[in-house]
Length: 478
Image (tube, rainbow, N blue to C red; front, side, top):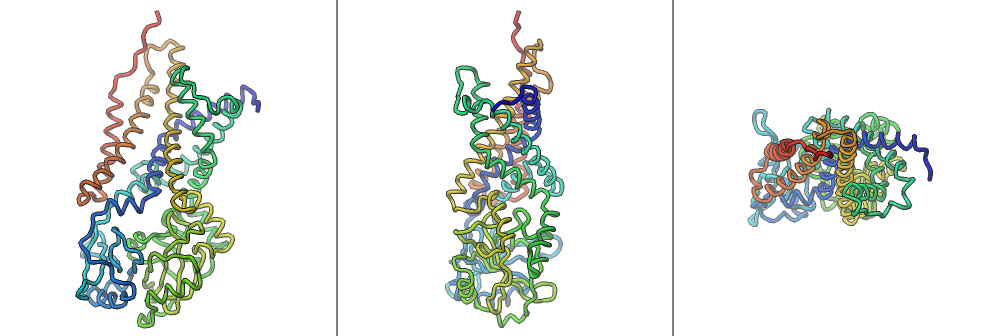
């Protein structure tokens, strides 16, 4: 393929400047995103084990709930029956309680002891895995979502522009340079070959990431339109924390998200007569007949503003992709077990929702099981390497031009970027490693504040150390 030299120069300049503007932020997004592909297992590994009897058998859940409601009446407002207890949620029943004053809510888990007595504990769920995922969503910026999300959207748009321009620049030399590793020609050629190889073979993955990231950044108007076009009347007003049902990571809440809410979004009105509710075992039996293959993980019960009981069942089906990172969900009538909304139920969605679910699943890697997740981990780390090599190539090109122009040492811009790039990359890598190591070694001390402060202290410290290195002075050519 031949492209006129003047047009090629324009593409090269666009690729260089767009890449340098977004590259460092994208490095953090891809590096942290690769780690967060296994957010739930990491959360379980870093959460301290709780001194709690084994989970109550599911068939005895009604007896457990009776004791929970007697001792903690406020739990009636919203509670979760955990079908697959793990270290983060070790009890059969979980709910949030709010201490007096304005303190944060407390997570409670309950089970029955060997003597049939109620046992309640407050697990200290590790925030490290959640922090890394949030770091990925915010492209590393310690800003509130209202600010970081639009920034992420702009970065994603620049990212898409860099992909297009970079591909067009590389096409004329595709045949001879695709598998070239020119070590003998110096480090610049070697890094260029690695950059081109990573970019070319992961191009479809990067296109998906760029497009979906733009959608996530500006999801509010997009999902307002979706709700009008596709949602059934029963699900049209469903929301969690004020966000649309399909919005980013909150779109298909996992067990921790639902419990953390403390209150559900409005669902179809159902009678509040709790004595008529089906037992969990009976609910699962009716769910199996209506949605064979769907494996439920949690049963989330709550009262809406009118005192009506609602039920949302979160789970997965290995045959289908899911709208969220790990799960889909359905709303059910807790008296009869009838499915009321299948808009987010894997394998039972209408065509419009199913298409949008595929779109989300391509970003989250929520299809194909662990093989796909590990593939996304590799592609995530490869993407981070792509952005690092891009910045390094830009710095090397600037230095060559400055040397040719007679500069005795790096200009200020070249010096700053030449130090910022390795400092940023090393800070991100070591920062993530430090908070993970601290979570394993000192799990009881790792609060959300401590995790955030530790990461950014390491991150900023590495940047400062690299910045303090003296500016490069070139040897005289005379």
